[in-house]
Length: 73
Image (cartoon, rainbow, N blue to C red):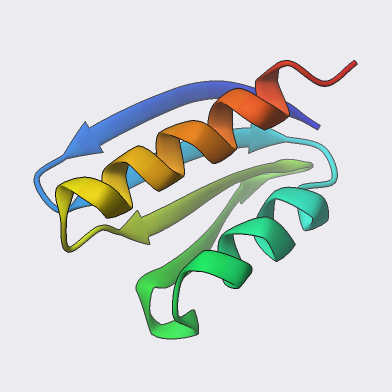
């Protein structure tokens, strides 16, 4: 999996990913309710994960998770 782009728009963080995002999704589900996460299929192996963040702490959590997955090889 590769994270191509991250956008922060108001109470939402959008993560554009290519490849198998199951590890990222599992980690997000450990920290957020399933109602706060939405998946969008763009095209072959390209997806957007939208996470609703209700607080500054939630934004920080998403940023830490993204950093963790970006540093994986």
